[in-house]
Image (spheres, helix red, strand yellow):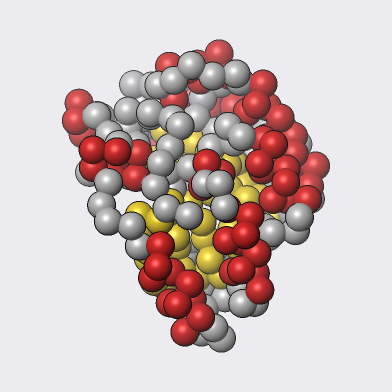
Length: 228
């Protein structure tokens, strides 16, 4: 595991639990608005914290309930399975944040019982994916990851960071349709404090009125849609 960050306590990342957050280095997407550029751009990588994480979690047994593995993109890590198994062996619940680009890895982790909660970022409607993710890709893998997560019956959420110049309300409705069998869809307003590309520092999200209209449109429909 190549770990670029550790947040020692979070009250909000794993729903209903007190947990730590482990940030892995490296990502196969290049979303221009990404708020963790130091985990995506190799030129901005900091020193690895890999040797610190397991000893810290050992000391926090009984005080923390859960560990969230995020990034970057955690499923790129070759030893993600053994790492999660070690964390589970300490008695922690595990939440995995993923972009869904590697459904084979995701399926292996789910089938091995190594994750309790999955949060998958859905960047855009499938036809806009390459534009938003900033890379060439096979969007069938995104569809397959969605299917795997929903089929698994484990706790999950899908989420979209909303940059108004990249996605409009119709795009969000299209994403929700793609997720029609999911439990929860979370809309996250973009906050341009730190981005992969500097030009996105001045970007904005949807207006409160637009978000209100989207939520009203989604009332009573699957998935349940919220603004976070």
